[in-house]
Image (tube, rainbow, N blue to C red; front, top):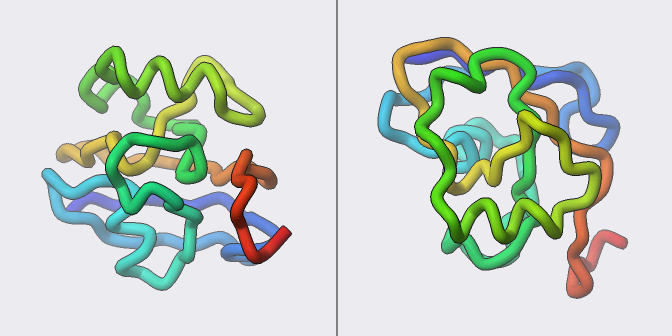
Length: 112
């Protein structure tokens, strides 16, 4: 199992969290399975930016994003060099530290 340290997020996990993920599982699925309710408006199909995360440690251990993910990342709020769509970032053997941005661009969210 791979460890994912989730940095504190005021709305989703105020105290932060340490979760386990299966290699081959997306960061998003691991978060959701561990009751961290990250937005995922497109149901993990790489058609939005609501599951955007910043990989603070372990970024280089992830496979490169494909062209579609990069196109959507360009539209993400708070984009950083180590940003990924968590539905597309597949966990490997290396531990990760991720930060869930405070905001997303989701025009249909009931929570805004």
